[in-house]
Length: 415
Image 1 (cartoon, one colour):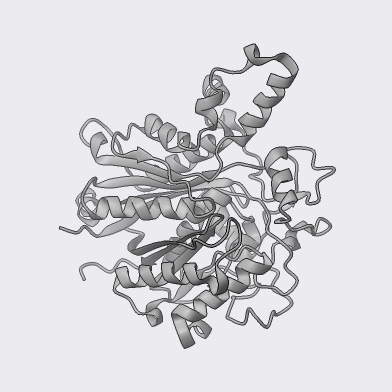
Image 2: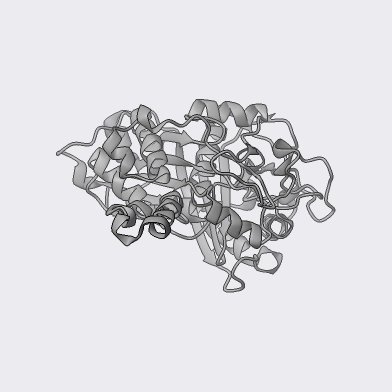
């Protein structure tokens, strides 16, 4: 038996807000969460801007011991998971714990802790290193600590596929329920890497925008004057469950997951394959698994990083898969407002697709001011758009040649 899989809860911690409502309001209004870096002194860096989570106080969510033993990315994941479980009215107890799994995508893990403890090592020696260093930095600790916090005893692991991590986590969680291994999964992505080490590394790779004098204008996907991406941070968690389980629980269904495609470029460490060949295959795979045609898609949340290579190649990939429909389907990049959440991006943008379906609104691509002849699709420039959205696709691609595509559709009962 193949299970249908639905979304019943969302939780978000993002540069636009500490919950789903404020994040969605920010996107629809075109508000930017990008500003000057405050988490460390960025003097000397080529880029000095980021999409930070603002006003996050761990003491509002955790006791002192928990704060000392968890990195910021794990804290984000737990807060987002709590929101999602509450919306889904999901209680985990001895009757269902072994039937609930957790998979959260993380790209880099606890770099804040790693940087802090490296300073301790240099200044005070190895005897002063925290015994919690390793469990605080490993990427799988987001899923591990979420499961511990809420008591989920089913399959528990981390998807790490660079910027595609969050999307692949949702996709693998979907497949796990679809084949009947568990009834529900806590899934999504989490990341917090706005640290001197990571920032310097991305600057050295010349990947970041240097539009430091206008932070809110710096992320400009598909615009001819785009010059790099903006690092963001946060977490987004979805509660997904088999349709039968959700119906038995009697909870509102936000959307159905219809398809998932994942491919590899086998091409380059950081650059996408020529013409977005790998991304095109991921989209085509998701459509095939969903039993859909390109014309069935009503909205695409693009990877849209604001880098010269990605945006051009993603546009070519969309044309390859969608043909003439590529010019008719609205495409937007919400990274224009949040920056790039790296391993959390796919979780957040999956949630955006669910919200777009439920609210009949397409969030805009902000800062689209200078058309690029090589990026000539409908990018929903600068203003949100009302639209009847039955199906939405989320595309996320990552360093190492990872490509992930998810399709969500409006839940309409039996098919």
